[in-house]
Length: 130
Image (cartoon, rainbow, N blue to C red; front, side, top):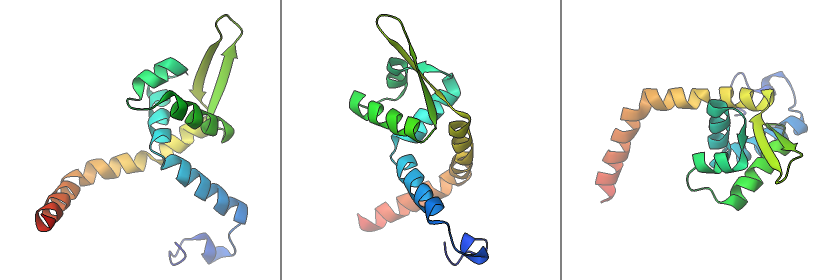
């Protein structure tokens, strides 16, 4: 990144707080579940915990809870508790969460454009290694 002509280093020192936030967000987004949850909430709007779990195959209750808490801490989702019995808890993306989803739309576009090339590369590699 430091050699990229448009990197922040070109214009001076990187704010260590910005660098830490980028590293934290990349780690969270790369955790597999965050982007899937963002996609679910983007596509389906506000959802109860159980509905999110249904729409994210393979996620455990514990992992969903941890991921939603981290997303809430980072301001990506808003958690609303309705005062009823039993408690009704719903999650929705914040504007910040929507904008992060939009930032990663480029990955989807890239994947669609390069799917055949990546599949061919994988096939060639797999044939070489056995």
